[in-house]
Length: 316
Picture 1: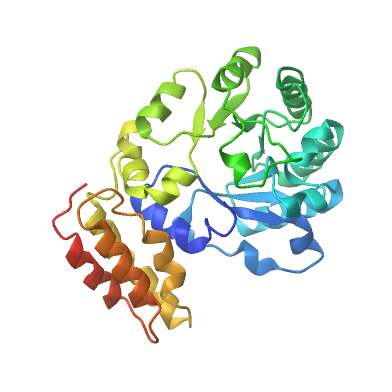
Picture 2 (picture 1 turned 30 degrees about the horizontal axis):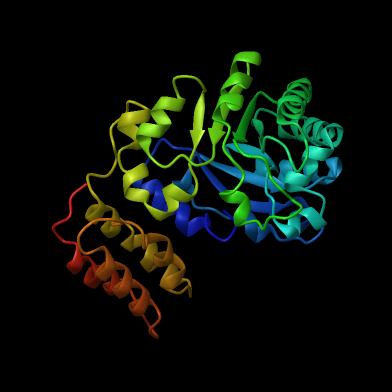
């Protein structure tokens, strides 16, 4: 979700749900420790609970970055062992680390030591390239547990680092939900979440009969109303904080105005709101008005109100 789940996206998603755990974009430990890019740690208090997702392969560097996350008040620090992009391969982190489970364990152990009471978690794939997931995945999970990590999210696909682009790796490798479910039975004490190809709350509820959690990425971004608007009541048995999509859009206006007053641009926020009315009457007009209006010089929150004219009668 790099370039997607920035602080404006997270602020928007938090309007829709108070209970879901939100994740940052992947931030490299090197950028924080060696590059001094502490601005990447900024978030709004309204985003909580929010987890920092780190990329890296140097245990000492990851430990220092974890300590920084603790100081900033993050609810969780997550090590990404699943991203298949070329950038992370060249930097020896992300999915390519599945070829080096001992190093992953060393990284996690160092992070746990630096985290104190803050949970350290991991996100991984089934395996990479020619690896046998039925062998590789349980070995990695066992090492993870030995390192003191009790929560993991498994993307139920292999990553083909040789031959597929990052985009293709999101769809082409076949899903193997059964293997992930089997890992929960094999590691009953492990808090295990599943990810990959899960697009609806109905899908999530089916998986929750077996595993402990469900991570939804692209579907929550492209159709946030369908995935998040009733997540609190259907998944967490808590009241939903927002009654409908129109109200959600209006509740973003204070955030937009604050961002504009700090010198930001409207499109930096509204680009994350384009899918709010996906599949509903007026959705095309909503998207077009937001996109075109945000591109105009001096665009302000009135663009959102104008865009709502296309969908004013749409309820939850």
